[in-house]
Image (cartoon, rainbow, N blue to C red):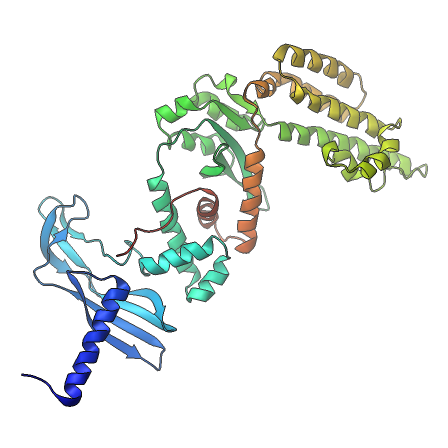
Length: 425
């Protein structure tokens, strides 16, 4: 029967709507748009999908072509807005009847397993999240916090599963505070490519032990050097898992500088307190001058600092010892570097500056893996750069309620991962 008048016109519009949304969604056989339901009062468009009855389905376990077993209950997926209308897909996901694995939910062409948003929404959200806060993206796409965290979790899992067995020449091991109260995560970073390879709770030996299980034997044997702080639990893990570890462990020179700087500041604080009793104000407000890298001084700053650094203050002597210790890293050959350290240690040991003496003894006991810097030339500077990015992640998220979301955010922004879902049609 041929329809005429309004019925024929309405049917033609309905067919056009179906075809339009099939093209927008990238829906191909065996899937079809059954109907489009515009709910103006809610500002929503509901698209109902069905499939051909004779369709065959691939088993999600083995990929074998199977007949239909049954359908799961109807589900809904959030799609990109249509002309500012919230767009929602409806479908009853089929299950394949695999002879080997039994009933299995099939992969849907518009969504990742376990997701309640379409892949196009997920791709857009991921693109936006690389540049904007989670709150802003959630508001723009009208998604909940749970949906944002869910898509980030899926993206990270995808990215980690796609990560190839890349060469790991030089790695850095560092820690990052999660919250106040000595809550930490352990980070392993690729110092060449500048990305986070691994994250674990706490900063114990077991925290780092888990990393070695995530890389292949070839990768482990290919590691040339490891930049790390002088933290014994980390060192125990490295020595347990890495061949010829003591030729590869490099104590990070910036952490060494931090230890020396802390010693100088202890001397300054004690001396300033003593000077205050006799009205000497020379050390007031000078903390950052003593801790500052001389390379970062302007000429005028350096001239202004000259009377202090050339004075007979104990702090000036401690500062000179710090600078002389750091010049160790300018040597090219181990023999001359050891000679320099022997001279410096003798000076430090007789300085009568207890904070400096304590650091000198520590450096002497760790000298072998300080001097490996001359062979490998690596530091955790890249890790510090990643830490700055992680700090931005913490700030834009306004904190994290749990470590899982914090770790996922680090992988998401700093892992160098392929995060996007498979492209739709």
